[in-house]
Image 1 (cartoon, rainbow, N blue to C red):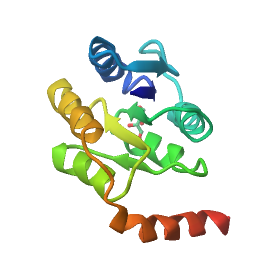
Image 2 (cartoon, protein in one colour):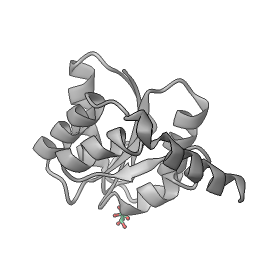
Image 3 (spheres, rainbow, N blue to C red):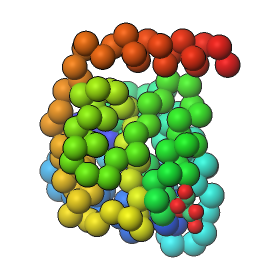
Image 4 (cartoon, helix red, strand yellow):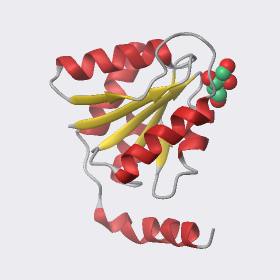
Amino acid sequence: MKIAIGSDHGGYELKEKIKSFLILENHDVTDFGTNSLASVDYPDYGKKVGEAVVNGTYDFGIVLCGTGIGISIAANKVKGVRAALVYDDNTAYLAKAHNNANVIALGGRTTSEETAISIVNTFMNTTFEPRHQPRLDKIKNIEGKE
Ligand code: RB5
């Protein structure tokens, strides 16, 4: 799969671990930063990954900050992004099956490497259930009213 990934400093270390795992599994990963533990602002990275997913050819995006909360809020401000803050296999499954999320958000300070890898695997191996499409259409309508 073609995956865009980005984080602030709070998500940096977990981003690196997820990236290494995905590359080992032969996925095509583009890293939008950050590239160190130096303090940066999560909205910048939520925007970069969100725009890449909406405008590019990525299958989905992964964003991380300390909790995943701030960067999911930021990514969701990009029109067309459906970013889901996921914290276990069940929420990862539902984010795809029900919400067809195109970005998942994780917390570098709240989620272990083992759980994060499991979440990413679950999300990648789940398919959207089209019966939920009318609800996604309603979300799209909200965006149209901005
Ligand atoms: C940065 O310290 C922290 O606020 C950020 O990583 C994130 O957790 C915000 O939601």
